[in-house]
Structure formats: structure tokens, C-alpha cells
Length: 131
Length: 131
DNA sequence: CTTGACCCTGTAGTCGCTACAGGGTTTAGC
DNA sequence: GCTAAACCCTGTAGCGACTACAGGGTCAAG
Ligand SMILES: [Zn+2]
Ligand SMILES: [Zn+2]
Ligand SMILES: [Zn+2]
Ligand SMILES: [Zn+2]
Image: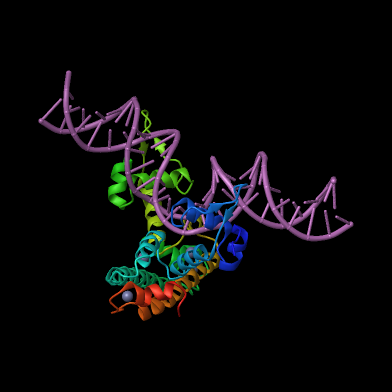
């Protein structure tokens, strides 16, 4: 039940280059190699990679995921730190949404400009310092 | 009324290094230099830099701003292209908001986990492939 | 005239990948 | 058994939008 990097990539949906990148930065433990130097992966490694992938899909940074992986490896510990990390991340996401909504509102006021020339264009005016 | 890069930085709120960067990538025209090689800026240049800054504050990419600057320099032309660009950008912003709101909803379901151990932690479970 | 604040160039770092180039290895078909 | 395609390897460089030096030169105040 060992996989080459290509098979692992296919079963997890994570790019080959990305897997190598994760190993290089120490997010995955160095893969066992065949005699000719090819990486081999087992179910454990595939699980871990899927963990990382789901973390990315939830928008966690690789640093956050690095911490989450370490925490998840200690099932007996209290999960308070995990929860704190997730809450912090949720706060980040909400902040980004708030920032983008402000942008959205400003842009909404500008688009749909029906002026015919750049001289009177609302958008250009706003960028040029007009209020 | 000419400014050194430091003064320009102060009056516009754009970092000195960022100004040099903008010049390097051709977003600002190469600054006139003193005999000793110092950059000097006039009101025109300050205006243009503020234009770029406001564009960034509205979330436009530097490439988009490059186009906007060029368009703004032709006041006689119709502003349709400017408007199209801004509408496209608004669409991007809305897409990013939608993506983040999906993340927010998923994270909301996970945080506030009151389990005491990592073994039963909802968050770890979700990352490990649980639903 | 010295000191400190400013300016210059060039390079490298950030984040999370992605895309080569230039090799070696394995596998499938004939 | 041989060849060609498909795979794997390392190392390096690129993206966007900056930021942070190092190692120098210049200018202004006291
Ligand atoms: Zn986060
Ligand atoms: Zn317009
Ligand atoms: Zn945009
Ligand atoms: Zn928990």
C-alpha cells in the first residue's frame, strides 16, 4: 500500500510540486525513499497530507497548519489551543470580509458611470482625489 | 516646489522603498535626478503617486492601476474602458467576499468546541476528514 | 568639521505555490 | 530485448506587492 508521489497527488488532489514543497519546508516529514531515490508514501502520510489540504481549504496559513498538525498528534492533550487558533483564524477571516465589504461599497458608488469622456469620469475623478 | 523622496513619502503616506519600487516597475516615470543622483519630484509626480495609492486602497492590482493611469492620461477618450475595468474589479471583490463567507460559515460551525481533549475535538476531527 | 539624517544601488526575503531545465528511472507495448 | 513515453529527481527562478537590509555616498545643523 505504498504510493509514488504521482499516485499520492492523484488520490489527494494536491499537486506533485506542492507535496515536495511541503516536505521541503518541513510540513510533511521527509518521505522514505526507494533505492533509486523515489519518494514513497503510506496511508499515514496520505492522511497527513489530506489534513494539510483541508486546513488550506479552510484558509489556515501553513504556519497555522504546522501548529495544528503538532497539536493533533497529541490526542491526550486538552484542545483549548486548537480552539483558540481556530477562533483567531475566524477573526482574521471576518476582518478580511469587513475590509472587502468596505471596498465593495466604495466601488459600487463608482461603477455604472455613464459619462462619455474620461475627463468627467466618476472613477477617474475618485482616483484623482475628488471626493 | 520639488520634493526629495523622503518628503514625497511623508506627504503621500507611501513608503520610500515602495516609491522606488513603483519607479522600477515602470508605474511611475523615472524621476528627474539632482547632480548627485537624488530623485526629485514635483506636484505632477506627487499627484500621480496619490492616484496609485488610492487605486491600491480600492484594491486594484498594480497592473490594473497601470492601465487606469494610462487611460486617465487621455481625458478626451470615452471612459467606457475605465468603467469596464472597475466593474471587473468589483466582480473580483465580490467573488473574494463570497469565498470568505463560505469559509466563515464553515469555521463558525467548528469554533466554540468545548471538548476537553484533542481526541474528540471537533476542529481536529473536521481536518482529519470527519464531517 | 563632525555627526546624524538622508539618499543611492543591488540583493534577498516574505507567502504559497508553480514552472521550468536538465537529468535519471520505470513501465508498457511491440 | 528494445524503445519510447511516462514518471521521478534536484535545483533554481518566477509570481505580486512589497519590505529589509548591506554597503556605500551626500547634505544640513550645530
Ligand atoms: Zn489564519
Ligand atoms: Zn466613467
Ligand atoms: Zn482587480
Ligand atoms: Zn476542540
